[in-house]
Image 1 (cartoon, rainbow, N blue to C red):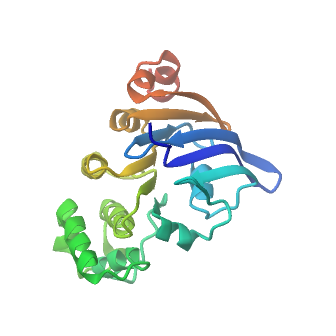
Image 2 (image 1 turned 90 degrees about the vertical axis):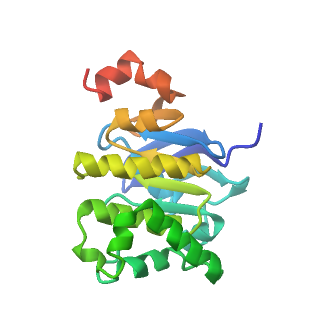
Image 3 (image 1 turned 30 degrees about the horizontal axis):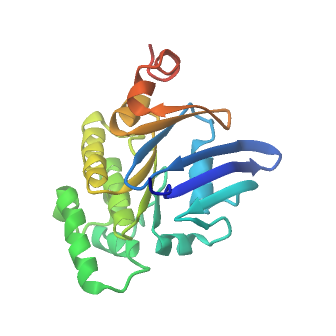
Length: 238
């Protein structure tokens, strides 16, 4: 079997004296979609921020494609093929949709391929194509989420980190966003998904990790976690 694309061992993240992530270990295989679920404050976003180097880890090792990336600056990670779609979307409000998407390709200089990738993103999100000259700040929350995902895809990532893509969106928009996530996954993209809607996350993923109080307490195939009584009681409201 191929080596995992990402191997995290003993990862710790602290804020002042508070330990948000307490020495977690997990891996993601190439082409796999993995869900990280847990209650608010479990340490999920802190994990993603450490993986994308938006935060310095307090300890542990992060290996991507067999190489330690603990000390690399965030923009180097984009060049290496890691893209983060942050919680809260983080689009550039005063730039148009097309300009925002172009910002996703800032590390690239293959103009013809960038054009083709732009058309691919517009194919995934026709609504963005319809509004391509509109300022991002004037879009709805769902449209901004589409834009944030599209911008990440423009960097041609090998590993896509998604932080709460359904947060604050109307059910119909959640459905559209997850249709695209499934499509991108079916095209071979490796994805780590953090999602409050545990049922949706596990239905979309192959494997899952359950995080509680900064620790991973359970891991299994997503289908098995969906039927696990503890998971059903704690996260599926049963």
